[in-house]
Structure formats: C-alpha cells, structure tokens
Image 1: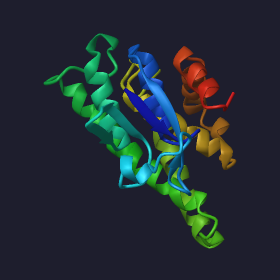
Image 2 (image 1 turned 90 degrees about the vertical axis):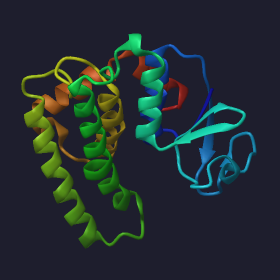
Image 3 (image 1 turned 180 degrees about the horizontal axis):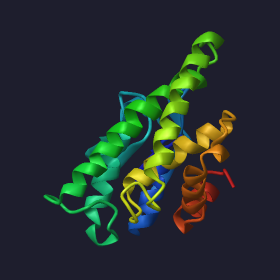
Image 4 (image 1 turned 30 degrees about the vertical axis):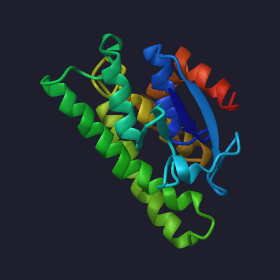
Length: 201
C-alpha cells in the first residue's frame, strides 16, 4: 500500500490514519505544480484528477478523495475503533463531520492558498471560516474529540485544517476548547511520526 501525498496538505490526515491502524505502507511525495512524484512518475497516470491524496492499494487499484481513503483505512482495521461499526448511528455522525469539514472548512481554505485571490475576497473567506471555529469550539466544550470522547477519522481530517488556520494567523487560542483539542491531537504518536516523515517537525 502506498500513499501519494504533499507535506502538510489534507493527505496528512490519511497519513495519520495509516499509522493509527498499524498497516504497512509506503509514501511518495507529489509535486502538484508539475504533476510529478518524487520518483519521477507522471502523477496524472496515477490520479488523473491531479490532486492528493491517492492511495495505491495494489497494482490495479487506486483510491482517491480524502474522505473515501479515511473510511477505507478505518474499515480495514475495525479493532482500531477509528470509525463506528456499520449500522451504529454514530457512524453517520462521523460521515456528517467528514462532509462538514470537507465542504465548510477544507474548501473554504482553497482561496487563501491561491496568490491570485483578491484580498477583498480573502477577507470574506476568513470571516466565514471564523464562524466555523466558533461552532467547533462549542461542539468541543463537553467532549475531547468530535465524536464525544473517541478519536476518529473526523479528528484526523480536521487536524491539518487547523494547522492551516495557524499558518494563516487565525487566533485559535481565543477558542479554548478547540485549542485544547488541537494540542491533544498534536501530541498523538501518529501525528509526531507523520510530521517527522513529511519534514514538518
């Protein structure tokens, strides 16, 4: 199994879950500008969408899209308890969180990474993102993780997003429960291993 990734990108969450599950895997860095992997492969031959992450499961099977990869990996190792079992209602809460993070947070950060985005639009985007942080902070007032007190793939997906927020100078510290959540995730052994592996620590 091989994960194609970009350091610090959303693929960081899939990388985390690979460590959390204990699965054997390799990683290969992708230059998204030139669509080349660090081993000189044409990344578009691997993932025609040209985005990360992509998970090579075997010679003939490639899975793309972060949420799909997170669900797939967690289902491979149910004993890791990273996603509730099928037919348990909280599993749908997990999917609910994944969708929220993907559409309301992840997607909203895209204009901030684009140097061509007008500053006036970036101001609007930042205002919308801040609203989401207030919501997250409220949801974390009574729980250690997004799914009550159980670390899940939803927490893994949110983690790189909050790292981006810190990079763009959002004041996460004003959201004490969200800050505590971030500190909790940042201390996990899987996160430490990933940050080292991706050259971020």
